[in-house]
Structures are given as structure tokens and as C-alpha cells.
Image (cartoon, one colour):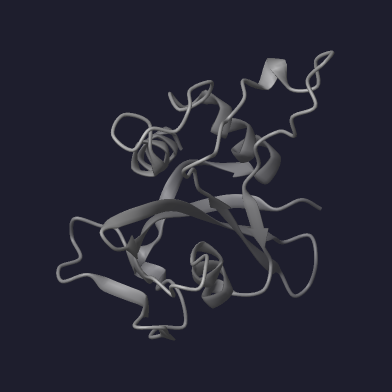
Length: 164
């Protein structure tokens, strides 16, 4: 059986002097025992280009479809998958209700076993991971080059979050 995503969280990575946003969805596969959990991590960054889905695979176009990362180990690894590069940036959950910031990864160390149950927001409707990945192509970021001001990781993450 496939994984069905039911919950989502927006995360922020501190990359001084800026921040990087990513969307994480938690999916469960109940067709196996014990049920398995996978984490769907969608992020859009400098140098990324989300090609319109209808253009992928057309003649003369060798581009691979833009995909999210699937992490099947545990929620701590899901948080760490967002942390890229040797700088060991801080990772926290973005939520207007969480003040001060609730860090998952700080000062080069995992300070939490991952995302807490109360940080996940239920999706409007459960969705298979393939369908969730297709939603990437419906954001305003699709077909446009990354731009630090107008078409960036926060625009992408918030659009995905609000869409599902």
C-alpha cells in the first residue's frame, strides 16, 4: 500500500543572514504492520527551477521532474534532511503561536527528537504522496526562476502549506 499524508508543518532553517523555508508532511502507511511513517520534504532554493509538468519529458527536454525528498527513517532525520551543507544551520517550526521559536536543531545539535505531535496541522483532506508531489506544480513558483525577493523558498512553502 502507498503512504497517505494527513499532517503538515512549515519549518524554517536559519542560514545567516537569511532563512530557508521548507514544507514537511507526515504520511502513514497502514497497509503494513506495524504502520510505517514517511516524511515528505518539499523545498525550493537558489538555483532550483520547477519546470511546468506538461513540459517535462517533451522532445529536446532532458530535465528531471522537480520532486520532494522522502525520508523514511524518523522525524529527527526529516528535520536534519532540511539542514544542508557544512554550516549546520538552526531549524525551527514556523508557527505564529510558537513564541519563542521552538527549535528542532540548534547550534549544531539536535535539541528535539523531531516535530512534536502538537506542531502538525491536519491537512484539509488526506492525500497520497504522488498526489501531494503533483501539488508542487500548482504553486506560483512553477515556471519561474528562483528570485530572493519575489519567488523564493518562503513563497513556495507557504503556497504549498495553504494549498493542502
